[in-house]
Length: 319
Image (tube, rainbow, N blue to C red; front, side, top):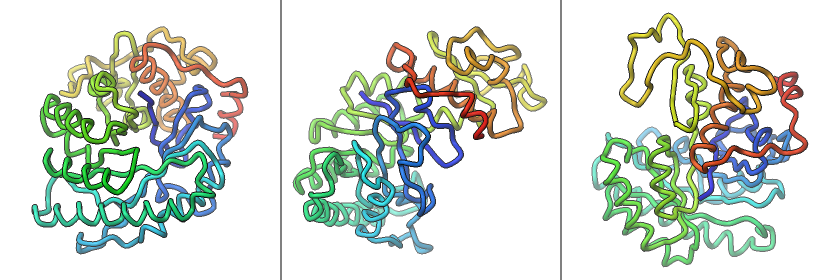
């Protein structure tokens, strides 16, 4: 199973500490002038989604961008970079707030855009060498997801992603894994979008899911979260708000007053004090790199291997 880390401008370049770093991007998160080649260190590969959440109009019944426009945005961002994966313009289904008929309509719009995307990819095959098209499966329950998966497979796609996974965080983990397993029976090569739980990721790996993505390293860092591996633990930096009596149902055991011994590049090269600082974006980013290191170490059983050209001190000067 491969791991893609969500990246936004201003986030650290995780490939600074991981030669096998794979990055998930969104066209709505970067400027029109930005290209993958603008990274200080090139990632191993990138996946570019459609950014569809930002294209839902005020009526919540239509998308404000076309499939052709999204494809052009994705290709502009790649600017010849490969290997890469690009997905079509899907219509995301939220956890609540819309009726079943509207959810069904969104699935049909997702399938219609997938057909257009497939045709666009066929007509542009000369510039898509090393770029894999991915079809996004949308559904509000297991049966609707299976329906969408069958329709997308019939179009001719070979790689798929399961969308609206944020909805699944509200149900039992056993139900999540059951739903994914049933979709896997239809499509085989499956990416799971937006997974935050390391335990669910481990179970997905057992199901032979192709890949997952997560924004956990930076999200935890922003909210003073620190991750350690072997055993996997999440902490909060002690502040006036996060006191020793504070607890959270998502698994934080205690407040971290002093950092633990750590061999990650941040703690080893800069010092453990770096992950305990707050108040500046650079400290959040260094903490995110630390979190990423331990997140991948816990998931794969081995630490990330940094590239030869990495230089964290240049990173500090730039940020």
